[in-house]
Length: 190
Image (tube, rainbow, N blue to C red):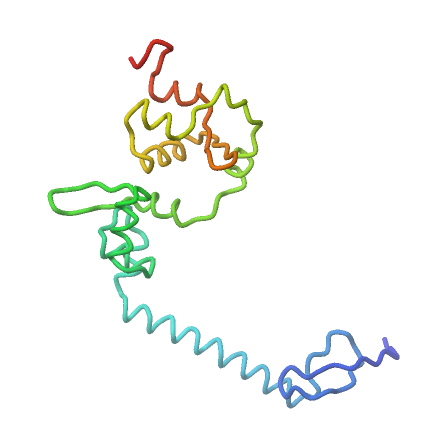
């Protein structure tokens, strides 16, 4: 089927202007088409070679990716951050650790959860209706009531999937959710 379409395009290989007869034409000539294909094939080969070189330089990286528990060196190598940054994240309470003597171990699922974006389920859950200030505790009130650090409290809230509500400079959590977790009655702690 012939057409009378004439479109001015830019060749993807030589970057010269040409008149194309179809809307899908990418190159000005058969020569540029072949050269463009060869350039693309070359880029794929280079990318494959670079990946193989990276695997040779870091043979343990693939082994690290499948492990469930990682030490500090493995975490820094896997995520490309320094050991000091990992220790700072631990001291701020952003990451949970387990100690085996002098050895510090982190769970891979905790690391993935920390570095991942919130899922659609989590964002949908956070858009729940605010129960009212009288039915909520502030983070400071919870910390004082149950004697817990802010990092541990935020981790617990995140793991339990409890909704937080930020109003102004305060963050609120529903009283009934916190009471269930910490077994708090109206008369005090059990």
